[in-house]
Length: 382
Image (cartoon, rainbow, N blue to C red; front, side, top):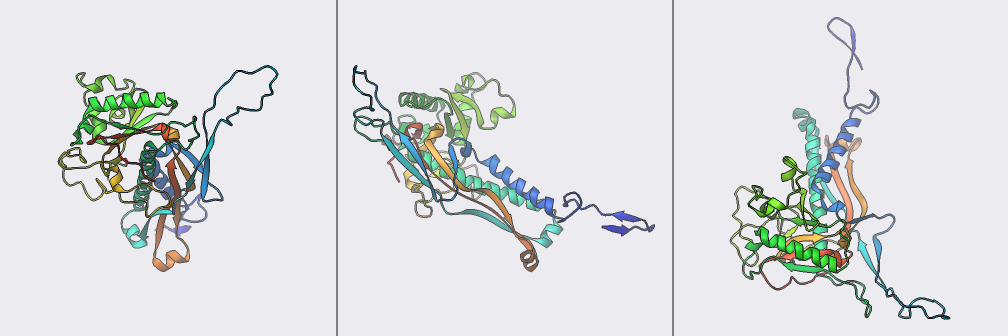
């Protein structure tokens, strides 16, 4: 668009939101928003790439097939070979259904946007991405916990496949404080690795996810005197060492930290005096509304059963291989923004992030739940 400056010379106005100086003057801004949303989602979800993920098209659920083991036998000369007489291997199925549409949205008033800065949309988009990622991870981690409490779907006589594993951290029955004991955590990790080996689970893709304080308890002995001295991957230095993104391994299990795992009936952390259902952590103060979220009873509000809050009162960590749980996505993380007449009427835009997914267990043998504060294994659900 040409304008006259004070000397009468024509000048051109550069519209930074236009693509190649043509078309919609906000086209690139909307793309920037979309990118920020995806970055916010990707940076805050770790579970998506640690389990089996499938994309669903033209349906509400996806079927997964289990094939059990079979036997070998010697051939008798002259006999035809028509398969084992016991009809092995046995086959079973698991169906994962997509939950209702998950959304996070905000209305951006155009005047507010003008008076502040256009980055307002980028900041809002990241928070929308965070909200979706948080819910995504929480569902997957609850599904893995569910797997650890389940028997295998393959139950044919003499061909029963191994199920999930639950391992107590420490031996105390009236205090969850041992959940933060690095020696007891390491012992639990080795027990878990042995159990996974015994159940024939692949060593590839084994991971553990802990509460942040558990994670830091493992690495704070870096002065050479603590247990962390021989756990750290020496190839990692500086910020990477403290980032919480799998900087070290125990028994071949790569370790992550997350505020979205079930932890004594809360998400990520629980404050208060040590008891059978609490590890005994002092609230640092001013933690805000979203720290230590109650888990809720999500079996009533979603298609899949993610368990009642009370079912996780003693859970304090997860160890699993990617076959433990599956995620079905009908709609991956997407951004929608109002425009045209709607924007004119309301003088602003509704920015919406959405996804449709469902998570559930697949191979229970690949899941291990760590629990503490009781000698009784947490009960199965779903």
